[in-house]
Amino acid sequence: MRQPSVTVLVTLRNSAATIKQCIDSLLKINYKNYRIMVVDAFSDDGSYEILKKYDKKIDLYQVKGWAPTAYNWALKKIHTDYTALVDADCTVPANWLSELMKGFSDGIVEVAGKVVTPKATTTLQEVIGLDLEDRYGHLGENIQKVPTMNVAFKTASEKRIGFNEKLRVGYDADFSYNLTKHGKIKYVPTAMMHHYHRATWKALLRQQYITASMMPRLYWKHTTKVTGDSITKPTMIAQPFLAYGFLLSLILSLAVPIFSCVAECLFVILIALYFYDTGRLIKRITHIPYFLAFYIVRTVGWCLGLPVGILRLIEARA
Image (cartoon, rainbow, N blue to C red; front, side, top):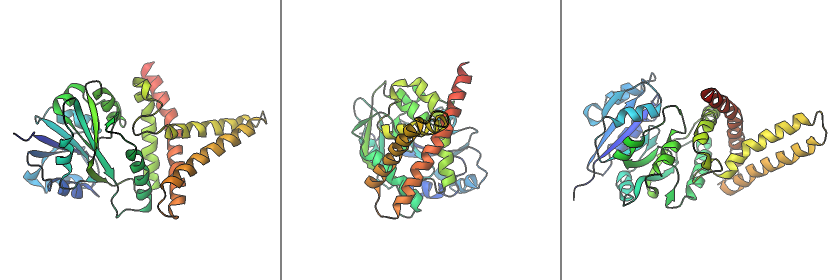
């Protein structure tokens, strides 16, 4: 029986710190019938120069625009049976693609693997990884959405649906939600890869802000998903709104004192959620301040990004 052909697609911009490790790991995959395609968004940090050293081992292109633009552009050139997506800050073991491809059967249009954190990381990256792995740990076999860092799908399905180029982030969720109209997404935890998370608090805040700013447009289109999905827990969605309620009540308490009690209650609930998740996930005592800071930064990023996203949505629909 012919082994299905697969294109492993990597898109990037300014990933010089991790792209070599990523490509080196992809070249060691034990799956036979695959090719590596890399689309660089005109990096200016040396990423493209690193990639050019791989010569004929990879198919290398440059395209302007964010990841969904690169994905849609690449689709026109991909003619393999399946396409697998890998982020430039990830590395994979040799059996990764073989395990991912085992997940396909009748009715399965996309397969997603597990994302874990490398051991040699900072405490911040370790904490982010523990939170993400906890969210992945609750996934069942059939799921609603997955990030593009570790997935494979039938190329024909991807060509039919495409990626929303209006979304700088959240395009993967939009793609997953659209894809589930044509079949199921299967989670295969044995298809594991390592992901290097944001290394600084500034980078984390920026990531969360950008993500939040894209969510109003995403959930306006997929209203049934606003209360959470297979990866986004309801408590994550509740935290920024608890913070909004706390700040609003605090302001109102200047004129109506009774709102100070409301503010105190909302603050206690918010902090309780932070400590609840921290208590579940910490591996050692030194994790506690990092987890609390992580949740606070994530909440601040969402509180800043959501209003921007709502204004952009209103402008787009005006």
